[in-house]
Image 1: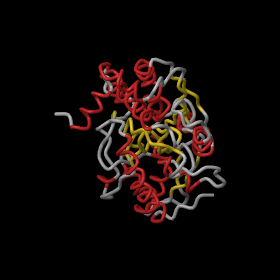
Image 2: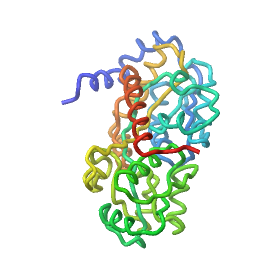
Image 3: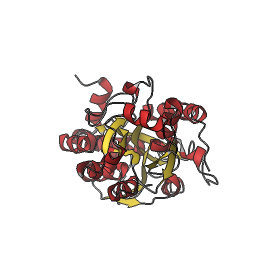
Image 4: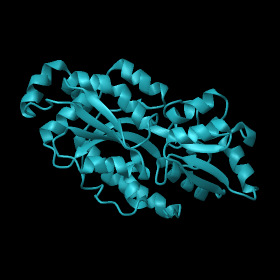
Length: 323
């Protein structure tokens, strides 16, 4: 049975309530809405945005235009939205690295905590630890045993400094007492490319980015970073390998510029929900290792506040030093 909040989200996405929403939000939107992706094309957030794009456009009655602005851990794209007019016409589709970037990137010209208005989480997903067959390990305990006797650390690629993959890898290295060396890329697709070429033997990235490597038998998925199995339920969690409480879960969240009228934010959330309740959208998300979620501006803000503290505690425990 759907939850009360989920039922409300579904109602907001129905055509019958569009006139009421339109009246609250004035004539918004009366021109195309821009979605900024702060990562390279082909990554998890990018793919989710493109899956949702047609249904969001259908609900809003205007084109939803996706623009990739990658670099600096996602802060370049986020900066575009932070500097936008607060009218709802510029949205940010970001990942949980949104919480880490302020700790990792120096010289930011905006404040991540105050520059954005939360619209909601649209998908939950773990990151996946994939390793090359040449390492000769079938699961995480075997990898740990192998690395504890190694002379050199194992390089692992992630979508960038301060990414969820970086955080998860540093925490795993600390808790398992194994030598891992972080290698930052501009995006998950770049990690996947080097793993496919055989020049990188491990990566912690989204299932969507890792999928081509898995399908070509260039890597094995041996663990997910979330506290529970998500996406491909056949992949065990790091917690199951003997590290209870290990939970570094990513999400895809939607934001707009702080100061955007609340009625416009609610309409954007309703557009997101119009997409994520669609069975085809949910099925396509599942194929890339994501669970569709309900966009709720009221709950997303408190969640961000709580998760910022969790991220800070992980950074302290793992002794992560951002260069």
